[in-house]
Image (cartoon, rainbow, N blue to C red):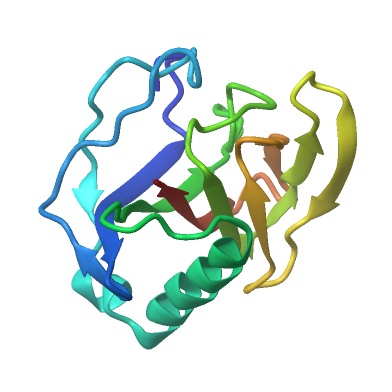
Length: 186
């Protein structure tokens, strides 16, 4: 991380949604402009690829289908303009020496149209509260993704989001928070 932290592990994959199908693209870097990510923006970031066992899993495919159905109810698909989809696996770790920061940039937008976040696992952690806000930064609420499968789908054009630091309940044991993040852009 540009802040010197070593608390975040990540895998990444890109997909296209065209003609009702989600198709994996060749492995590529993740890029965000500094406008959206002042900490790590304006750099092509290469991560290990998401394994096919996750990308092709029926649960992952059902998540894609569900999100696309909801999004399409709000944003009608544009003919001949496939959606770009990025899937990120995040593990945020916390140790006595390194605080786990799921979103070190604070309340932010990702520069996409929609963001889906699903908790996969919380191991020996407290906090990690999801906060949402209006475009001007006014807080709109907060909630904890606490149980595996807890999820949120946000309109990134209209809602800021962030997650508070995580801390170990027992600092002598391993502590981490795993999430699946999927972004959708026209």
